[in-house]
Image (cartoon, rainbow over all chains, first blue to last red; front, side, top):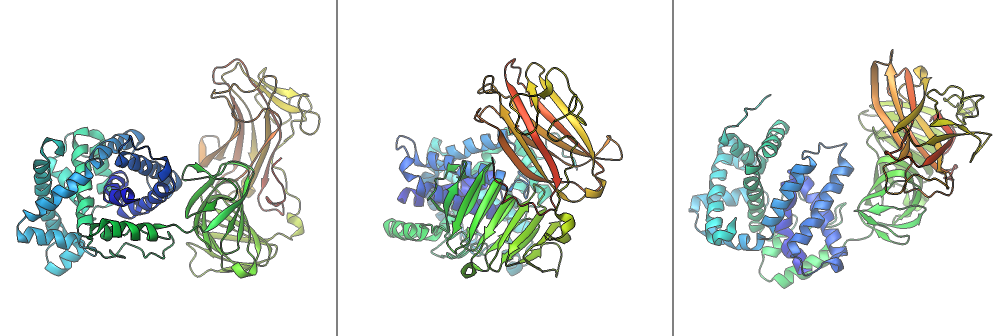
Length: 165
Length: 435
């Protein structure tokens, strides 16, 4: 059970990678959690938990796409989906380590950078809201945030050494 | 809109940033997808950034339970949500304990009957199983689901039903027969075309692959709210029926004597002949009438291997039926002495196409039903029944019977009692059971 809780942050990223839309990804995460909870007995400890959980999530993504294919455009062909799923699983396996590295790297940002990140990732945050409050355009904010994200990414890779990927 | 063979690297970056900050439109998403497809080198960067975005969100979800604008409350249709913020709080065990407690899904229905395989989330369900929110798939046969509110829904395959909560379900495609006792009044079935609210009744809902919806009420009252037809609410009572498709509504009475006789549209649907089956074309050594293994009458149609793909076909004038629904039915079986080869791609199917004016102008969507495949038992006739749309503008309907032998020289299949009738009739899917 605590493994399911711990894997949430990694599963969110994994599912979003495959479906792009955040609301759809949230729905699929819920479906995935039900399956993980009900089939916890099937997990084979010789496999990494995140690998197994991502496999379950991928099947839910495919089932979701099949169910709603008529209502929504399935944006990934099978080959691309499989390839992204494989890369995302590999990254997911490093999720815990990355999360720890991220905390260290956030501390290394300037106050201003940290504040921008905090405003964007606050539970009610969005670039739209930030644009309204600051008068800057969503584009400009997005560019600024991306620069910070890039910086964090480099820092995480550096912190984790060659395993950072 | 075309993009250069090697897109400017900044373009990819800005699309990624827009996606992550939720400002990317559909065209941008298409571009981004194309870039990922064309250049595998970009994929790791994409994956890494999506994960970082998720980790950042997690890191900042400081204990807010029903947090962001898009999140739903714990009491939502989906019954529960992961409490992301708690995992970041001090005390993983406390978080886990609350997580497990709050995450415990509550069943909204139970499977009470099934004549064939029915699945949810790719897992086979057994009679007596509790059912949670999500789609159930019934490719064929019948299944009965009792909702916690008291409503009882019979699914007739092929059917995909999204269980929402004890008082609601969404039918994206297929057939339902619904019984709602008075204590469960208010139970609703949502389809792509309409919302049907049951006020203590018995009714059927059929939804075709294009979302066209037909409701037939046997007892009680049903309120139907068509989508895309603003301000219209219909209250149907016993023996009322309505068809909703693409913003148009057609209502009729099931008690109408002129609708009593469903007219068969096919010529010689039972392949009785004389001679080669009258009205059907395409006969040769591999498709012919036979007096063996007949279901009704004196003849059936026999398909034998050796021809790759063999077909027989018939054309029907459907001028007056354009824009309505039709019911298709057929019986097919293996030859027990020479069944379709196991593990092969052999199949017997029917394909229906529509044309306007001449064969050159196809209209609407093709419909194809598989009648028989190697996995079907070889003991008796297998029944297939479904509804389909006759598209607006259709003048001719071409029905093809297709036997694919998968390159095998063995395998024989029989077809009998084929039928296509307009759906506007008193004939009830509920009353006619699968053989």
